[in-house]
Amino acid sequence: MAGSDAAPELEMREAFGRALVELGQREPRIRVLDADLCTSTKASLFRDAYPGRFVQLGIAEQNLFGVAAGLALEGFIPFPCTFASFAARRGLDQIAISICYAGLNVKIPGSYPGLPTSRAGASHNCLEDLAVMRTLPGLRIADPGDNADLLAIMQAAVATPGPVYFRVTRLTLPPLPRTALGFQWGKGVILRPGKDVTLFGTGMMTSLCLRAADLLAADSVQAEVVHLASVKPIDRELILESAGRTRCAVTAENGTVLGGFGSAVIEVLADRLPVPVRRIGVQDRWIESGGIDELFTLHGMQPSDIAAAAQDVMRARAGQK
Amino acid sequence: MMRDQVGAPPEVLEEMAYRIRRLSMEMITYSRWGHPGGSLSAADILAVLYFDVMTVDPARPDWEQRDRFVCSKAHAAPAVYAALALRGFFPIDEIYTYCELGGRLEGHVHRGGLPGIESSGGPLGIGLSVATGMALGLRSKELPRPRVFCLLGDGESNEGNVWEAAMSAAHYHLDNLIAVVDYNKVMAKGFTWDLMGIEPLADKWRAFGWDVLEVDGHSLAGLQEAFHQLRWVRPRGRPLVLIAHTVKGKGIDRAEFNYKWHTHAPDPETADQMLRALARAYGRPEEGYSRLGLEHSKETFYGGE
Image (cartoon, rainbow over all chains, first blue to last red):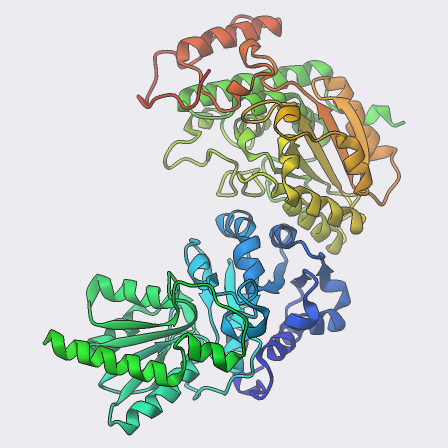
């Protein structure tokens, strides 16, 4: 099951369901738990393949995560599946204490994160999961940039003991340029080298960073695009190395800028390398229902916004000199 | 009925219940922090579980055939630690590291290296879900012998998560799951009926698809009988809850039925008097607080009468 086998034309949720089935075939300890969302998350594919290893728990997310903890204690590898909103908000106590504090081997997919949940509105467009989950010691966090990334993250999750949270967007994402490195915890990749500004992306925002880099190239700006699928642990060395060369950076995440991915990057830089940084993401506000593209425009998260932010930090860098 | 299966003789259980109470108060007094009320109310239940009912092996805390125990009312940690130490899971002297930096006995039970502790807790309402997951896991592994016991508080049944778990355990016919409610009628700040009424409690569990037994939670023989009845007599296919009617603070006069002793550490002199009175009540040689004059902390007492 090489990463290159993943079909990039699939919606990521479909790729998720298929990956569950593939992993389930190789790893008999995997159990998939559902809280009445399986045909949305596509955990239903696992249910259809291995009905005896699928546990339906109804609309009760607190119990979903508690039962996952219990199954992990008995040696299973549970994937409690629900939307990111209901994991990060409703299930947080159980994820924190029953799973993470106890150091249990539970793999938590957060489905439908961020703005692409669009018309469902603020309750379902989960913006805070990265921020909230990042505060839990011992929890590894990843936001895949495409389907191959997702598959590699899920393989790494199963291969790594301990709790993992990873995002699964509903969208079809364009495949990222492949690198030899693949996914590793705490490792990012330079997808496009550049010398003028670094665009740090995670999840679906990395492909928007690549498009922003194209826009910048038209203005003779060579933007470096760094994909950091591993949000925790984050690749401190690569952040410092890249921003050390470009001396300015933009971060981009599909979620709130408060406490999430951009904050993680800034924490690294503030410790060692205080350079101008702008964070692309939803600012401190509730979002409303709307179309996906409309929402990305409204919240300043389009490639043109990333490019404008890059110009902004380059000006700020010039002012610092 | 296979009455001959009842293991421990009454005098052993009584001694263990007494020592669980003593050690709980020693821990709370020495660390100057803890929950005496809910530890003392659970002492007899824990004595019967650890010295009669549950199959455990202190030398093999992860033995696959063991009975599992989840302490959902995780603030009763002193009583659980006392039971584990008495049962041989770790040296009894280690109880004085309760709540100490660098120790293994956290303020609320925590799966962090202490043998015999299966799960982490603290926020009320979360333990029965973990126990349900373990019971499901045991069935999935086709291990029919081990059972999962889960100790709940009564105030805890205010929490919605308890009922989510109860619903799912009945849905999956988990007859290897046994909940025990330490129904001591007192919560952190008052009586259950004043703060949030939970009656009719037995009917609630029945309505959720559980078999229910009610028992005097301070009658060692009654508890023994109830646990053995559920093991050998009851029909299969349903989870079971034992509603154990108890007295908060049982065994320490001034703490009994008194919410002010939910979270409260006595000063050493008071603890000394309490433990002497406890010894007299049990008909034991008078024995006071063992670390009188050996206080290691000047921190102020938490909570208080």
